[in-house]
Image (cartoon, rainbow, N blue to C red):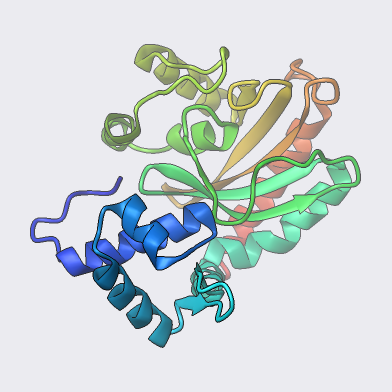
Amino acid sequence: MGKSAKNPVRTTEKSLQIISELTRVGEARVTTLASELEMGKSAIHNHLTTLEEHGYVIKDPETKTYRLSLKFLDIGSQIRSKKGVYKVAEPKIQELADASGELVHLVIEEDGKGVYLCRAKGERAVDLDTYVGCRHHMHSTAFGKAILSHLPTERVDEIIDRHGLPEITPQTITSYDDLLKELERTRERGFAVDDEERLEGLRCIAAPIRFESDVIGAISISGPTARISDDWESNEFVNQLCRVANVIELNKYKV
């Protein structure tokens, strides 16, 4: 949840509820949406036809169901393309995936969660539940800890207050003090680790991307614990990852 609006527009809220429900179910008829959202059918219909008129919703003439249009993809792609870090990092992400053979992500923080801007798969990469635009908690991911480790303490506290420290797996850090210790370790060694903290059997390493005094994102390499060693000093991926992060940081000055 984002911050509460002081004077929320109820009609806008209802349209957003419909969009969220269609995102969840894929497609639905007016009666189904009315039942799920506890709204009148005529009100649902009015919102849907307005969204349809502006190209945000598509109606199937045969099934009478509504679904979200690819206009949302167009908007998201335009927003992503304007991110300077994406312009610089996108080709480097693919290069790192090819070199490591694993799954590589570029992530930024928005509203206290990590948002995937880019992903690339090496020849051995596992197929995870990640996709461009998806969001995950920061405390249970390597990229999240890489970013959190370079945010002001006040911002870290805001994120934890809003999203908490939920246990995703038995290995997830759920203690505030333990998280702060882990962020300190991350700053000292220059990279963060996720040792089965978001998904059992998966290990992840991430390096922050910084511009002047700000952290603007992180890149990560993810793979099975059988292939990514937890001997961090000799781990073959650490140097690859940090080197690419440094190249992205240097090239960011040109954007």
